[in-house]
Length: 453
Picture (cartoon, rainbow, N blue to C red):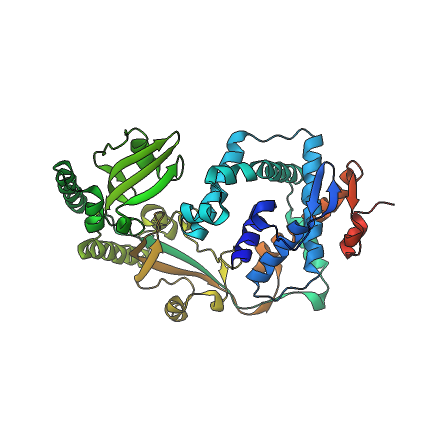
């Protein structure tokens, strides 16, 4: 498990840090040079092991060649970016570092566990990754520049489809297009006031001499810190929500804050130690509660919206824009996105079992009853609400056609055009950059396009 985590970290960052993933029994080696950039054997192996983990061991060994080919292309983009003076800003690098570090904090469940595992602080890990992240961003920018403005016209889509041999036209299973309106209860002002007053009482007790940590154990509603007396450990700028940090960084050592409101609820904060941009912090969190009355109000509103939709007094898009609390689906007209393929189309096997029973009874154009629905908000908390489902369309199993499957055929046509553009770009720039491939990798079938006689 420990070795797998090491490999996973390196593969995610698309780089290798010797002290992080190096195995004592394996000697690493350079297997390619592109411009001024090298590819290590361990980079290929890290990504290959990650694929094994994701696919439960069922990976063709030839995938190492595919990985190596992709790394060569990435390094060629980087080499050309350097020749073309493509640049990236420190802010872009820092933002990408923060995004990836936050991801791995979630993998390890806490910053402290991540630091303990690798024996390095977050700052040291960022320093290790910084140069490679900058290179990856430059490579991505060059790639975006190479494909800027690439589109396919309707005529190109038609031509692409007509070139497919009749016995090779794909067959699509029945698919559904689904929309949703999601509504979540809002915490009432009365509940907010109750939470605030409760925290005011706790604060007064602490001012009168009660122990902060004891009060945290008794009352704090932060499941990750209350048993440790509200201890959040050492924090750095950018790790916590802005509202919390804005207050914490102004406090003196040993000083307790007034009540602080964040998306999580209401906090008391005390700073135990200050080390430059690092703070050792404890807090007590009280969350305003959603009541059954709040849920009932949402249910009644959703019943009203459903009635308006059924009698056509409001359009679907108007209802989504006015009432839906789900920003992702709201931004695309209330349509649901299938996480398996990134489109708005679902095969029935892709739909959650509790939802498919409702949809099976619906005809195209109909709306579901108001259904209970649980979502995870940006604080990571599960919230209970309601939703209405709209069955926009349902196709029968069929061979692909331009009429029914234009968007899918368009995507395939664009992918083919991108591949051709990539091949042309490679031919144009391969000769401008030094490329050397180790003998151990020249047996890969993809190498013919890289090795120039």
